[in-house]
Length: 449
Image (spheres, rainbow, N blue to C red):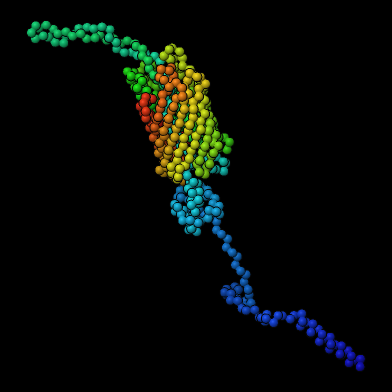
C-alpha cells in the first residue's frame, strides 16, 4: 500500500511538471512556426543564412558643396554655408563637385574671393594679391606773382644804313634802323610756388585703403601757366615724389610720409631746383571689407614747412610758408565684376591766413581688362580715368600775392599689376581756362611689403 502511494505521487508530479512547462512556452496561435527565408547574395566568404534579417542601411549624409574656382586661382576656397547649396541655374558657369550649378549668391562669393580688390589673410591684413590701385592725381596749381628780371634787347637809338642807290641822282638811299642793346628788364610773372603745394594732395599717388608699401612718382608739367606769362617763353616743371605707408590696427589704419623734389626749367633765374615740404598722412578705414573690396575711410594730411624754397612777392616781401592741414574722406567700391570706383574729398586749411583755402574733389573709374590668380607673372591690367576739381575758397583773384583759380583736370592712365608691385603711366590735361599747364605726364611705381 505504501509502495503504491509513492508511485501515485511520482506520476502526479511528472504530469504537473509537463503541464506547467507547456503553459509557460505557449505562443500565439497566429505566430508562424518558422521565419520566412531572406535572399542574401552569396559571397565566397559568407554563404546566405535562411533566417538572417539584415539591418536597414544608414541614410546618406549630404555632400558638402565644393567650389570650382576660375583657372589660375590657387588661394583658399571660400566657405559656402548650407543656405547657399545648389538651387538655381549657374550665372557664370561655376559648378560644384557633383556637377550641380551653384546658387547665384555662392557664385558671387566665388567671384568676390578671386577679385583683385580684397581678400583677408590669417594675420588680418590684406594679401599681396589684393593691392588697390593708387590714384595718379594732378597739379594743384597754386601760383604767386613776383618780379623777374630778364635780359632783353632794348632800342637805345637809331642809325642810318644805305639800302640802295637812286638811279637818277646816283645818290645813296639811306634808311634809319634802330640800335639795339641787351638790357636787363623787370617783368611781373605768375609762377607756381616751387617746392610748395607739390604732391601734397590726398589724391596724389594715394588710395583709400590702408596699405603697406613704398612708392615713387614722377610728373612732368609742360608750359606751366602759359596764359598769364606772355613773353617769357615756356616754363616747365619736373616733380619726383618718394614715400611710404605702413598699416597699423590690424590693417585698418596707416601712417605715411611723402617728400617731393621739384625742378623748374625756364629762362634765367626761373631755372631752379628745390626740396619740397614733407607731408604726414594719417588714414583710418572705418569700413574695410576684405571680401567685397568696399572701403570707407577718412584721415588727415599734415604738410610741414620743411622745404628749401623761398619766394619773394611782387611787393618785395617773402611769401608765407606755414603748416597746412588737409582733412579728407575717401571711398573705394567694386561695381560688378570688373568695374570699380574710388575717390576723395578734402579741404586744404593753411594755418597762415594769407595762403589760400582750397576744396579738392577727385573721382576715379577703372576697369579690369585682365585679372590673374596667384603665381601669375601679370596679375592685372586696368585703364582708369580720373577727374579732379580744385575749387579755391579764398585767394581766387590773380591780383593776390598768392592765388589759385578754378581748375578741372582730366587724367587718363593705365595700371599694370605685378606679384608684389604695380606700374602706372598717365597723361593729364586741364579742361577749363586759365590752364595751369598745357599737359602733364605721370609715372608711378609701388612696391608692397
